[in-house]
Image (cartoon, rainbow, N blue to C red):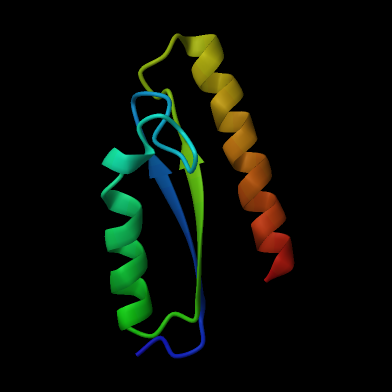
Length: 79
């Protein structure tokens, strides 16, 4: 399978607060499920990048996209 590989997963939420430590984090069922499946098939490392407020106004959404792009670039540089 994917023995020893690394995965970078981008998850997107319409609301704000589903990320780690957020007020809605307990309702985030995506991250634990995807983490379990990827590790089950052999990924050694699973990194998550969270995009929130996809339903926000265009300026807020653009700012969130910039943050996500920066996070992905930083994680990609580690690989």
